[in-house]
Length: 235
Ligand SMILES: [Zn+2]
Image (cartoon, rainbow, N blue to C red; front, side):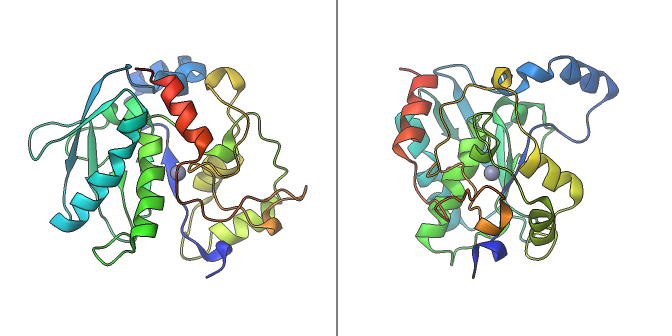
């Protein structure tokens, strides 16, 4: 499978069923929303699986916990009761997560994170790649290609053409929000762009006009990912 035919994660920065009051509140705080999506240092985040084969859930949990070895955050996996993060395995619905504390604004029992192509048969390599990435969003990280320090010149029609087709079938708004939207520097804390970050998409050469491309599918946390998260959630 070429990179153009890979599944891509889409990250949700706002709930789509906001009340008018919430929309106004978020709009007025837009510049701080991403910084505002950061959890308190040392916070305990409760997490619940809404479904899924027990073996698969255990594998997801084991990989997710790796973030807590670096960040001063606690993941408390609970089997019932309200929880901050709720995980579904709705097949065909893509893999995605809300960003950081935005999860807390989503009503129970809606999922805040989905694994649309993981099954008990998924390889450990694929599972690690997707789970480390989605939990990166859950601790507040944006996609690396939307880092304000990035200078990608997109070949828009190539990107739209590839992502609107299977397997992703994204609509224009999803493509706009996940590919072309740039955050402003004051909205985020950011290091220099790290092409091997777990939060970087695979970017084929055909998608850019200035010869930029990433190193394909990144499957592990980079040294820069580790340093960045430890610095932002210090012990
Ligand atoms: Zn993502």
